[in-house]
Amino acid sequence: MTVVSADVLPSGPLAVPEAAGTGAAELGPKARLWPSMAAVYRAQLSRARVARIPLLFVATFQSVGILIMMRGVVDGGSHDAQFVVAGSSVLVVAYVGLNLLAQYFGQLRGSGGLDHYATLPVPPAAVVLGAAGAYASFTVPGTVLTALFGCVLFGLPMGNIWILAAVVPLAGAALAGLGAALGLLAPRPELATLLGQLGMSGALLLGVLPADRMPDAVRFLRDLVPSTYGVEAFAQTFGAHPDWALVLGDLAVCAGVGVVSLTVAAWAYRRAAVR
Amino acid sequence: MCAVRGLGKTYPAVRGRRGAPGTPEVRATDDVTLDIRQGEIFGLLGPNGAGKSTLVRQLTGLMRPDAGSVEILGHDIVRHPERAARILAYLGQESSALDELTVSLAAETTARLRGLDLRDARAERDAVLDELGLTALAGRPLKKLSGGQRRLACVAAALVGERPLLVLDEPTTGMDPVARRAVWSAVDRRRAERGTTVLLVTHNVIEAETVLDRVAVLDQGKVIACDTPAGLKEQVAGEVRVELVWREKPPLDVPEVAALRDRAVESGRRWTLRLAPEEARVAVATVTGGAAFAALDDFTLATPSLEDVYLALGGNARSAQGLVKA
Ligand SMILES: Nc1ncnc2c1ncn2[C@@H]1O[C@H](COP(=O)(O)OP(=O)(O)OP(=O)(O)O)[C@@H](O)[C@H]1O
Ligand SMILES: [Mg+2]
Image (cartoon, rainbow over all chains, first blue to last red; front, side):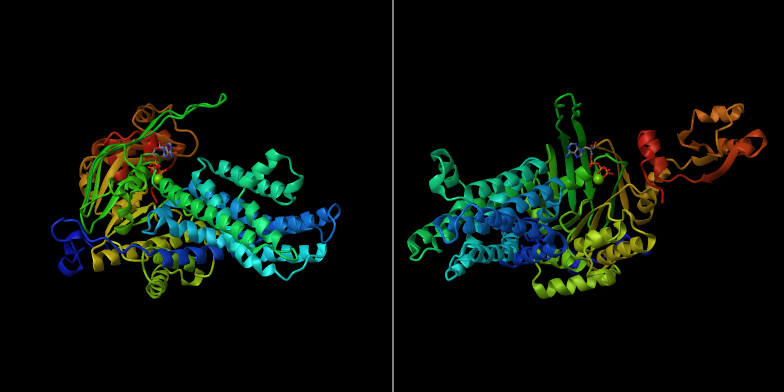
């Protein structure tokens, strides 16, 4: 082993440049938002290959199971059927975006894994958005599969199914943002898991059935769950003459919740990173 | 380049819940003052729980100190913790953020998050993986590597992208000699070529003696000594370390052996004694002759190591056994 003693070290050009006046050295570059977000996104997507596939399968399996069970009580082609299909599809987003992401950030925080990101000059928003984006992407195959299967099973038209291209990212932003915020705010990883599960149960119980049959109190609760607006938007589009203004309105709520929850998550990240 | 003044951190007591006992408050770092010079490999040596990780987490802006100041290259890290990320690279004791990535992606992503563009990040990644002998493992997820290999991959992530200060918390844990050598020569190369400063946490005394320029010995949150390894050893230069390993039980019926027991640090069948040279000669004569010899399995005589320094400085004997000698 070669150990170079301190006094043979190069000084001058190789030495760290000192900024004039203040005596403080120049800082290294900051990572910019978009490139670092892309890097986090790519890393998270590759994690799916290593670690997440079984859970993505569970998410789809659960929704397809609900469709099959509900087929016994809901008539094909009915108004109720539209909610069942839309609700089960958005449930995949809630399972992965809300539940799994809350778990992931809870565990990362609990195990000290956030230290890695916190000692890199990366904007908090890049870590949160990159991870949330990746988790929202994981939901695409399951959501599409559930929607197609549901349409076939309940005899619904597939003409407007392209709306999923807007529903998945916007409901994904709202639910993944909420998941990230819960995961980063929960004081303990078990609590993050619990909150994520509760959020998903809410989406399941309140999203799959049409609102008209619910008591007022439950309806109020349903309005508080962000996944509801994704379900409403998607369910509208099965009708013969969808009210596109209502669809846009519901999607706008998703987008709004997404912006707020992702902002809170980025703030929570910063708070969790420096204790 | 790095000045630490009066740094302190106390973890608050946790009250027990439902019959479970609580934990008392812990002074993890206690009025720590250090100066690290540019271009040196500076070590923090101490047993488990001495406060080494807590100290480096305060230096890297990860933890707000209760008291004291940290200045790195002229920047106040307590007031501006976010600046630390632009001055230093940190290798923590945990790898959970990278566990599910492949070695290659872990290094590349870290380089990009350190502000490199895609081309530079990939070039740096390839260079560092090659330097550490990780190229053959590049496509494997960290999770599926052995402990030492995983640690090496984390070192790779810490080394990508240039930083004037490297803060490495036990970088070589679990590594075989080949991997260790790769790490130390990578660190040395950065120092020779760029004047990189290294702050290294270890509880391995042999490593401390061979790679460190200066070392601070930490015990229960306090710096109990800070000097070059040679300088520290001079403090106990007049002593010799005698290690005795008994076959089964020490022959306490031999009065000379019974007398030695009072001065020995016992760990299992091994006794460690620090004696003046004359005393050591007598002790060796006693155990290698007569009745005691039959009970003796092995003995060594050695000049003092940093472990002896630690003991002589008043570090408690039980925690000194936590220092690794390998
Ligand atoms: N999050 C925490 N909450 C409460 N006490 C803590 C916490 N982290 C560390 N401690 C306590 O602070 C002391 C110093 O811990 P630290 O992790 O700094 O030790 P260390 O020198 O790095 O040990 P090791 O060699 O095992 O890594 C220990 O007594 C430890 O139990
Ligand atoms: Mg430690």
